[in-house]
Length: 302
Ligand code: NDP
Image 1 (cartoon, rainbow, N blue to C red):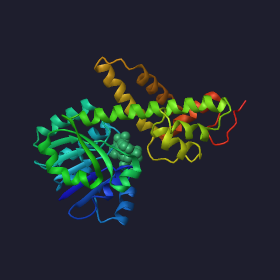
Image 2: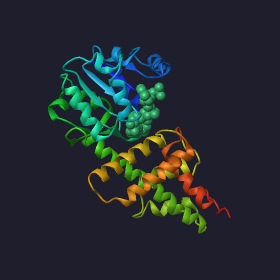
Image 3: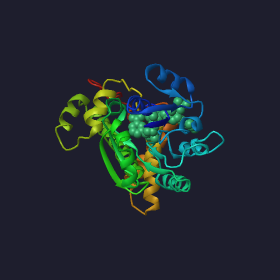
Image 4: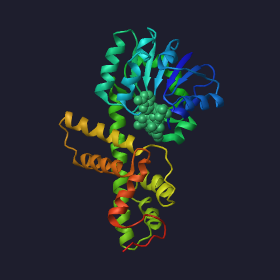
């Protein structure tokens, strides 16, 4: 099966690695060509010069880009996907996109005999490397069945969320919860550091109690207490996701003040920490405001 993969970023690259083997024939394109060339040195793939070249012979096209705006950009234009994608192909958009743009892309492709499903992923770069991502997809079940082996190559828990755009909606809300959990865990630990409680001891108790979350169980012990802060998922992308959730809430007239506040706080964190910071670094704004560092044995900074 001929596949084109567009976007070899932090998560796209390990996802694509599972498609660089039989029964698939993979062509890749990345805006920064050196990344695609480095990928081709490690995997049996062809590097295309443009998105149009990448998709010309493909039956399945996968996009994994920062947001729906970049998906729109690679679709259109002289060397864009739309200039050469074949009738009967399926575009799987693994970007954490926004529902209205995905619906409009699906309509545009549909007019050319090309099917679309939105299929954002969760599980981070660890699950992407292991091929065990959770995939939440929106679209028609008959279309999904045609591409099931492709999605199963990198996904383990694969769930139909509803019509086109539903995968994006579910992903945005999941990530809004992640943003709330990171900030609330950091705020709670900042109080405890000020109160003289070692955050390692605090997490030991919280993680055996009802205040636990993925942030308290994994992210903070592995990345904050150690001060390692590895870059696996850019803060800017989480800010984008929580922004999508906040816009959805507005559009649907849902009352979500916690999500709105977390969106504001992540916006502030992005301004302070920049485009390449990791999402967990958002705890640094809480630390700075409270004059503490959340690390083992950390005393309160007067
Ligand atoms: P990165 O920022 O690491 O990579 C983005 C990719 O998009 C790169 O290949 C980049 O190319 C390309 N790109 C950016 N702008 C453009 C453009 N204007 N035209 C063409 N290509 C462009 O993102 P991730 O791989 O981390 O994330 C991709 C998607 O997956 C996002 O929607 C994200 O929210 C989602 N996601 C990420 C997770 C993670 O753990 N990282 C987890 C779950 C979902 P270049 O190399 O040239 O910069």
